[in-house]
Image (tube, one colour):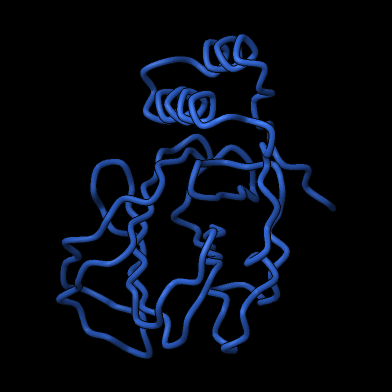
Length: 170
C-alpha cells in the first residue's frame, strides 16, 4: 500500500478479511508512506480491507500486535488480491509499483521520507467532477456492486482508462 502522504509514527495498520478477521495489526515506530504485507493467509480472489488508526488490545511486540482485538480505525481501501503481487494505493489496486525503498514487511522504518512523496497524479487532466465520478465507479467495482467490465465501460464513457493489473517481473 502506497499512501499519498507520510503517516505518523505509531499509527496502527490493520489488515482484515472481508468477514472481519484480522490478519495483521502493526504500529510502525517511525513515520511511513508504504506498507508491504506478505502472509500465507492472503489468498488470490479474496476481498480484504486495510484500516489505519484505531487501537488494539493485543500484546505489542515491537509494533506487531498479537491476540486481542482491533477497533476504531478508518477503512483506507477495500481490495481483492488479483496477482501474487498486488500493488495498492488509496483508490485501490494500481498498475504501478511504488518507488519506495524497504525490503518486505513494513517499509519506512529508516526515518527517511520515501520518494513517493512527490508521486505524480495518475490522472492530471481530469477535472474535479470527472475525478469524483471515476472514484465512485472504482468504489462500486471494489465493493462488488458493479462488475469490472461495467466499471471499464463507465470509465471509458468518462474518457478514463481502467487501471489494469501490474506486470510482475520474474
